[in-house]
Image 1: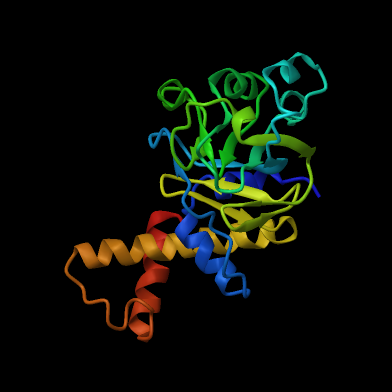
Image 2: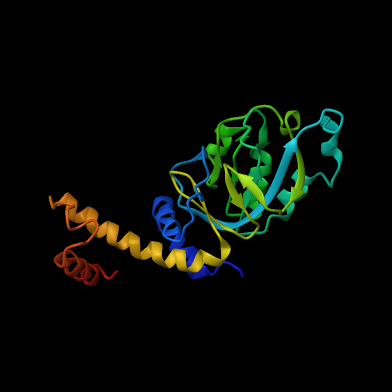
Length: 238
């Protein structure tokens, strides 16, 4: 099922931390991609369905620089096939010593209308990528070409990225902290719950800034806190 526009809009306005809590309530404890961070921390949320590429360790006799002359090279094909609105996700085995991609391929994803790119390895040309108005998440800069360590193999198959299972079509959400993976069949309900949680947390933050104790407020174990929240929502139109 394709990502609904209303769900996408809701996920643009919630944090990965809040989404982690909503997923945890459903028994999903390991959905936040480890050791991955945004190159440009000043962008809106990244939201899109996962389109994946799996790397395996490179073998020297199969990964010479000449392989890029092949128009069917999986890395190039994946970049050209990633659908508009999708997030390109690289499985680089958490190895950032060689690049998963560089600024040219990421620019191509941007121009094609993709929603962002994520790797549990690294990107080369990271200063240029950091200046782009395009969400990109990696572990750390990686100058050498991917061929020195990675062999692109499988396009749009289940992968691991930062110790998280990513299936094609899963919903990727990135913010200034990192990236979380939402199973596709849960996206609508998780987005709705996270929206509700965000409203409550905004209310709590406002009250704490006014000097109110968190006891009985967060969580709202006192009836007055629940009544105050309902009044706040009505006043704020939320």
